[in-house]
Image 1: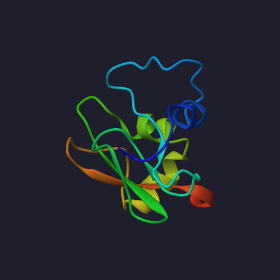
Image 2: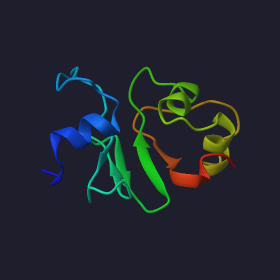
Image 3: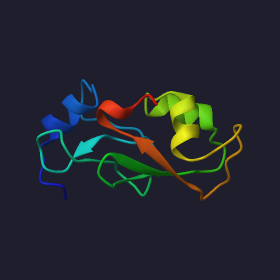
Length: 102
């Protein structure tokens, strides 16, 4: 689908085997060189220097920050959020690359 190998997907996601768990997001670099990040569902779509995460039931802002290895404050600042309240279906900008900390 993305024109990349299984070995690349395993390497990008630190997987030792090809076995994956349903519902787990995978990092996929669509051009094969690590510059264009997408994931396995509607969770993330590439928009340049940020990705977009669609909030699912049960997720928290802190949990999303951990998932993408970004600071909570950078998510709040990038998305103009005061506090930690998010809602299901909300689309959050996620910093990628060198802009992970604001």
